[in-house]
Length: 521
Image 1 (tube, helix red, strand yellow):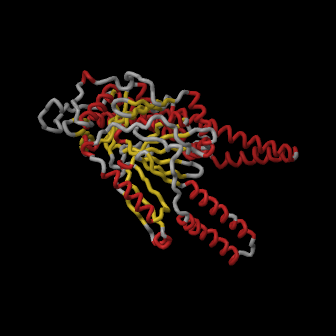
Image 2: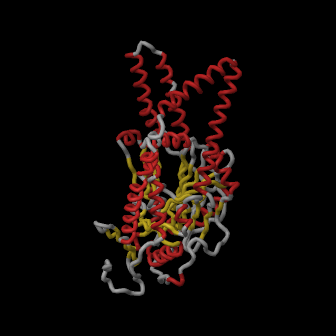
Image 3: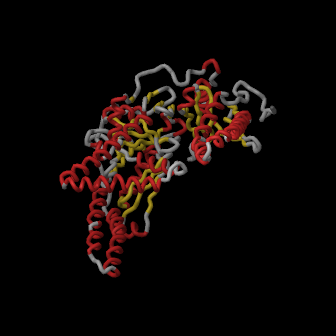
């Protein structure tokens, strides 16, 4: 095979390599899993069993073709860790070469789906700050090779000495130290109870859509409503009002139990074995039952944190903590580092990142209420138009009274939103507190903010308030409803904090505030 590059080899340039051969088996099993439903559909389409068995040779040929092209794609995919970049070449007919310089790689994470973990393989994701998630993805390499790639890329990105093959650490099993935060099975069970979910009904509906070739769902639905709903309904109606109330309570209880079980199962699948460690490389998070993820986030890339909860779990003192980073999760805008913990457990994690929870004596500032009044009035125009339509065109007027009930709901919700919205500056940080059902405190070090923008629309200019947009790498940070003078004073404070830092000589070691728990959300 012709080498993709004629660059002379050096100590820092590795030879072209391929992913693990066992990865072929994982890919084939994944393909077979996706072909289960089409195969069932074909067999069901045959009326005679002999005809269905006669289809097996054709199915074998199809699987053979899939296997051949899977092998060919593996053979034509190579990667190389060069002196300045990571390069991946792929493609059977049309070749594609993708190269990412080390300075653009924000993080390297490892992911192990269930099949890959069985065979000791891992997927390596090279994440960049371009907003598109993973620019490069290697699936699959051995666990040892995955850890070696992660360490080599990080050290070359940080202009450190290259890691030799003999110095490569064990990928998943390193020298264990006490974790910053971890969740055992008891904590996961408690967490799952608070993660009540009815997503199981969406799964059932999706399964019905996928299996419609096997059953006549319309006939089954008609039989269900005729025999079960109507038949049982007549029996319950004959038992009297007490039985009807008991039946309704039992049905509601069944839905609640189903939601609780679904929440517990989803929590165990996602967060089983959750462990957060502070290593020399940064924060290392491991979790997952079927798909195990191993993500390391450098400390100096933490830009801000989100300390939040929900209305019900707040009553029991449970909160969560997320880090806003230059390299975020593929499906989220932040890294979850404490999914479910107490404030005294969260404070040390925040302190390890050089951030602090708001102190008890924080002087909070509430913005002007005009911003929320204007938004409430604009939203109230829709029910007002509905009432006008009912009164003008409908002979029945009572629906207008029902629509009118939306006015106090809108007014109360926006008043509560204004009451909950506060901001403060303390300990060299900017805090923003907001949220009604899901209250949250966003914290950012002022020296890490990129810019400050004061924005005013026509209505805001007329009413004398504005919105301050703060440039936060990897996230969003804005404070609405501020008076102009207050916004300018805040901008001056933030710009002064930014200008006072010489970023060319900035020490990446975080500032520590201690383990003060601070206020609850």
